[in-house]
Length: 89
Length: 195
Image (cartoon, rainbow over all chains, first blue to last red):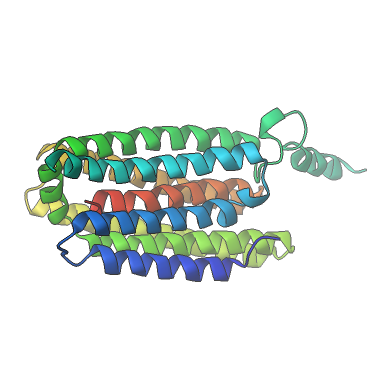
């Protein structure tokens, strides 16, 4: 049996509100805010993949592929934000 | 075994029999072929957006400053709530409560419609401000990526309606809907907030 959809939804709402709270205000360290909101996206995506998509109980191959997609795209987004900073340093 | 029993058995047995690595997935295996191909395409778009942003960080920062991240955040809340209703629909269908399942699917579709309306309001505001797909590279990618996703929201609403009306396997339809939700959860910070 998967986790209660109500519990997953509440966590997703809280993580989304946290994303808005961190991402909206202007900040002196936008790269740090970017890192946090992408980390929150990873956490939200993991819940959607494992609980709503029900891959928690699916074959390991598919769970691994979709999780690899999620880690890959969020990791690349983090890298894309850091590269200009590293080049400028 | 009646003809109906035979057909039901064939429909439920399909994902388990003869599908090799696709066996054991929630919903029809062919839906997962579609989901895998969609994730590959969205992945390529996200990579393109990220590389373009790394090459022109100032242009992308200026572009993001002209977006409305609150509308994007509201749409994230709308879509995760719609996904929640889709998950509740599957649980209701598993418990044999078909009417409840249909009501939850209807709620998920209505929230999908709300996502579309909010997105169109956002596009309208951009067009009114003189911003279009040819304004610069950021807005070309912004309209391409979010517009492509919007088309998938519309397709997902059609799929949800189809599985609810025909009493087909709800998991097959909701799996596509959760994929659309998953992609948006990544697109929102990348397009509107990051950097």
